[in-house]
Length: 416
Image (cartoon, rainbow, N blue to C red):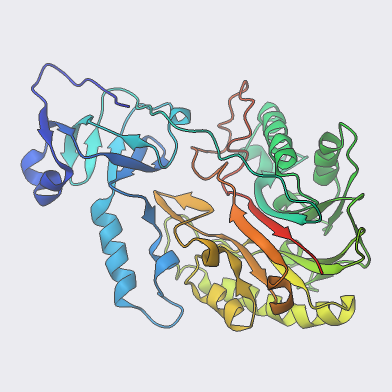
């Protein structure tokens, strides 16, 4: 539980409320914060702590969607006031978001900023065990797998080495197998056949028979989307339909639908992978919102064509939408008649954490007919709670934790 020893200088025991009331009077003083603090995130050389988990304001309150709201700005101010940045020499693999740190000893260096002399470590539980799907249920997983490349030149070379990519592949395969899914809808995979083939070879060891459907592009150094599916459980019955016809579009390979048939029952469903335009680091929901709205409009324009082409109205939309729940693109999709399944389950949950604030960037939408067939949907917290940076894989790490920066979304369906 804690943590560091500062110096021979006397350490004053204080409640968090005392510090928050007058930070300036404690500057340069050594303190022991007796209020239990929760790890909300890790960022470079610091941990972000607060009395409770922090959620992104856009997850809870309407900001840009219908005009600015007082609640949005109240939440923004509350997060800024609650969060404490602790600079430390830290082995980040020894902490997990949600862990509790008690009796933190540190030196106050400024408002909401503290400095420790040693690294912090906590006791934390491993990732929750994921129950297997029940008999006659179809399991579909939506997952951002964080720049999975077979060719490590160009853009990918800046992100990881060959040895680190091998560790990433092992961790990813271990995680995917633990999910026991029939269909994986994967974002941020290198377009073309090389990366899916590399992943498929590892997945098929042990007797499984997986196949893939991807959207190829001429530029092989881009990230796109890919479906991997168990050929003994499901099959495709038509070619994919993309939201874009312009192959020069940066998001051509990131938004497309594929129709699947459950072999056992002959029932059909249409699954879409979508990866909307990202925000730039440190920017608010306003940043690149127009691009994400264009993504949403293109998606909604494609779906009636998918229904007509594939002959079914059961539509499941997965992927990384780079939008929190109350942002305009998400609300646009909901208003178009597609149920947002995740917040209906638990509005205190999340799939992503950035700078200490958690929320859903990864979504699960369902058409009305599809929503009635979904048995359960949940994120599996094996990534977002752990520290991650590009090239940070430890060569001896055999866990399935943190193969990427987003948690996968697990969807169990009983088709009928």
